[in-house]
Length: 71
Image (tube, rainbow, N blue to C red):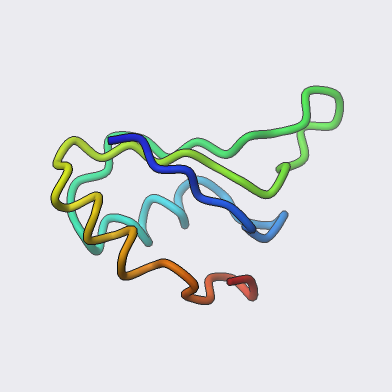
């Protein structure tokens, strides 16, 4: 399952995001969307998890949870 993760801090990096979601199961990938010109994060990412039940549990638990200063 591919999960959209929005409202991220511009300082968030992929390893931190992967670690956050790995609390709920195996993370296949965590990719920040970056500005092509500057390489700066655009404040959102996509996380892929193979197990749909684990992905749903992560979404439910992390919805509105503060992470690196942002909800």
